[in-house]
Image (cartoon, rainbow, N blue to C red; front, side):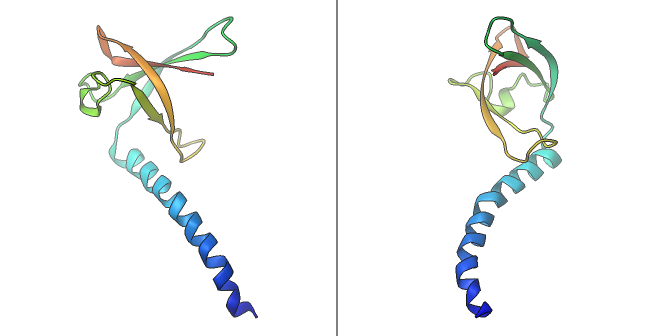
Length: 108
């Protein structure tokens, strides 16, 4: 009876592993080989319905050109906070041409 249970469990386990293993590998890659960015400033915007502006300082000293942030249309970043979750989430960003090493995003 228990030997046939694998036929019911295997598809679920394979689906779970196929959907979560790429996230695990992406978080390991980002934490071991990419430098990422540091939060330089957080500003609460009054009368905005709870929006917060987060400023990030890039660590690659190339103004974001190596990771394709400055010259792209529809700019976004995938933010990962390893202390909270291994999954990354997309956020729209904006930056100033005069200061390309600082990028900002609005979070609600």
